[in-house]
Image (cartoon, rainbow, N blue to C red; front, side):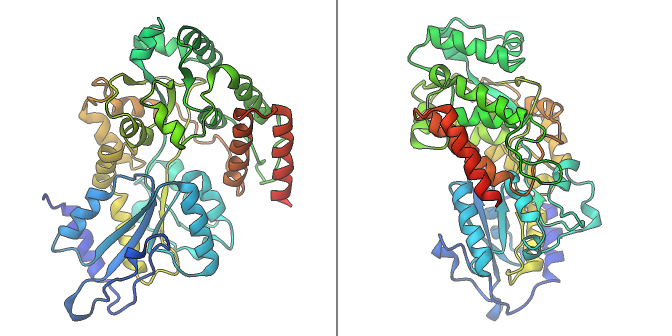
Length: 434
């Protein structure tokens, strides 16, 4: 196994900070395998723990770290399948003041709620002047509190293209050349109009993967969907109503009426259930290819209705309850350095937030055999240029209200009346903000 010089340098630095004999932080309550950790006595190495959700592309990196004799400590990772599940568990353990691992992953849309005063104090400040130019500026800023504490190190960003089934397009008589795709995906109106042609020619299939993903894509292009700049909750605004009206008006004809991430959603990848899906980098290998390994028609378009958008991008944070804070901070910094973010992209499609890593993957010119030998890294790099980092504004309640909004969309997908579901959503938001 090739040993990274970065790993060795970091290991030496971490050695000086080891707290001998300290008790390791408790593991995730969903994974009892983290309970037994070495204490550093009798020449053994301490073990630090990390919890992620989904696929961060860290499996081989952690194996590399643990196999290197110069590593001053071992690392044990727990992976929770979905962010919502991990968010509930992490919030509960934060409130209890016990149970959290040494490093925790936090999803980007939820980061503002953890930056809030009182909550952010429960995390270690990882500020370091040497990190100032490591990541994309807006991702770096998104991990900082209002008073400048750095509590989240950016793992990835989420510039979006659109994945589409070239084989299904051909069956429907739709053009598949990039110029035509860009024209058909130029605006939301042209995108939906092309979808109408598709479902007319392919009545057994639907245009997109779920109403929820389209709602998310459109929300990422709004200015103040849920809260104003001073964090006042306001969902009765024209931007949000426009997203709602557009998405719910297409439920009957273009949506497969399934919940994103659910079993039916996963099944549709291989059953020709839909033809398009919004695709940030993490959607490529971690979802499309993973859910449809035998399907040969998936492609990534260098196009996105309305210009562009950023969906996702997570952070690594170190809770104050960690008994190995110095080691945890050092390992989080290592995971978000250039070589490791490049490796995570190649393993799981997590598009780097690290500037040097982004430059490296875009310059390599490697083609992705699953996506028709396209240079998906270059496409995502091009899409990143279309991201407006100010959109959408994410206040402290963004993630909670987003969950309520997605639930309201799901009610309409299940046959509910759009007006009634909207009113239920507004009522729920009112209770949340009281």
